Length: 387
Image (cartoon, rainbow, N blue to C red):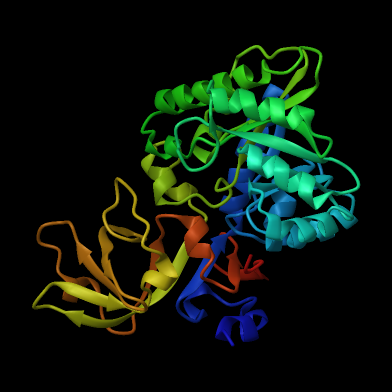
């Protein structure tokens, strides 16, 4: 069994320098600040908010993202995440959950069971999925979001396409599906480098889902759901006028944690990252000016970010990055001329790393060590694992 999972509570009250390595550290002050900023933006506009629980996958941070029940809907990428949020539904803090992948037949029995405890919405982007719902034959129709592809080309039906028209018509004719609204996720917004670029992406999302909502009668109540963490940071710029029958909803997931991909957008600062990885220097190689740490591809992922070369960056030494990884090994090198590995590092030294993509990095760890402003462990969070 994972050592941290067996012994995590014994580290409460201890400094991060005592943690086993590799470990995932979460700054509680940074999480609280990041959540507060986004909540203020959303509440200032008077729009709905649906946090995505996929990043840290933990009950404690989900409770914070919901504002202790002020916001009452989430989106989840796995059934494990839906099962994980059920305690919040029992507490009366959560009303509904959107399963965020296009629905497949093997999941329908489990989703049907889950909606006995929580309202479940499904994602649809193909007429065949409506046929699956009909074949499954539930007692009541499923509420569905129709997913619109606004340029990410991951999932969704193209805005303005004949396929979208046909899908809306097919869903409307079915007794087993009820269109709740239209949803899009601008994953390509991570390429934004300025607030103006993020605003442009947000505007494109907005136009796409509003255009799709025009395929239904004007008196039909609908929800249009837009967003991603980069565009969420500029949501306060949204001034568009909604049709009277349409409610606007923002969704975002990474925002409590942030990472180097987010920092690369210029919409958050390096100090806004709440996640660090603790590792140790295993060896130093002066002849090639590199150092070896015990955090590799499994601990860090192989995700990259535009402005920070490699697979992670050393906190406090941003010119030193993890330039190569194998399964459990990471190689540190510097982009700065004249920087010497044997002057910066020694065997047994602790290093702390910012990661490129907090969602994937966090998935590798069975325990999160939550620290205060003095880097003392004040809590441990156990994430939901699996699918």
